[in-house]
Amino acid sequence: MFNKLGQMADMMRQAGQMREAMKQATESLARLKVTGEAGGGKVRVTITGKMEVDDVKIDPSLPGSVPVNELEGMIFYAVNDALTRVREQAAARMAEITGGVDVPGLDKLMGGGGQ
Image (cartoon, rainbow, N blue to C red; front, side, top):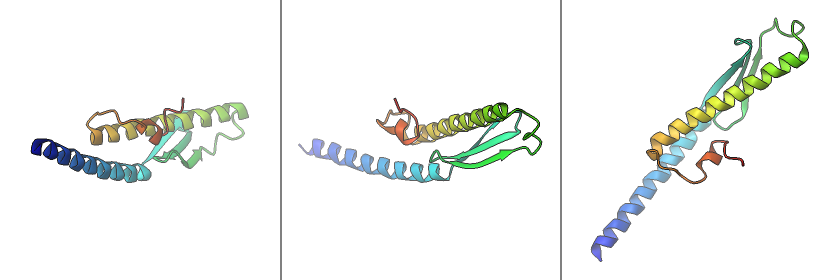
């Protein structure tokens, strides 16, 4: 009986540690900023760990020198590049915290798994 109580106490302590680690990871992700690029770096989009666009930079030589649809395509690819990079970094940070254990719903927290 005491052995089971000890195991239960250990589980509770570990759950508390995991909650604190997740809180710290969430705060860390909120500060994360990742930049994606297209057109050889002429279009750059920065996305935060909250999956929000933080900044967009377009080389001043591009507008007027390329067709609008090409510029739109570069922006599209830069945004997707940044989203991919931020998801990869967020997943790596979370894997460090969880020790590689699959935590249900974690992919949604990081902006993925929308299916």
